[in-house]
Amino acid sequence: MPTTLSLSSLIKLALTFVFTGILLVANAQNTVSGSMPLDLAIDARSAALGGKVVADLKPDGHASSYNPISVDSSAVGIIHTSYLNYYAAIQIGAIDAV
Image (cartoon, rainbow, N blue to C red; front, top):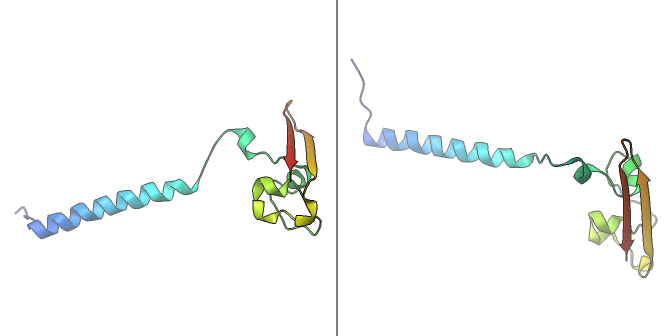
């Protein structure tokens, strides 16, 4: 004998599917896969650390590219340049002025 669902059961089922779909879409926003140049570091220290940015005791002008709050006031008026040769004929140059 087939079972019939009441209106409230149908609404609950529909809302469950809608919220599950929203959660799946929202969860997919955590991963960003872009082109390779977007994943490369712009300075030698970050490149040596695998693209990670760490705190440094010396003022670093390239840190302003990652987080502007990390610029030291004693480094104002200094221009930082960087040029990196990666594998497969990829070269990256960066100029940061503080």
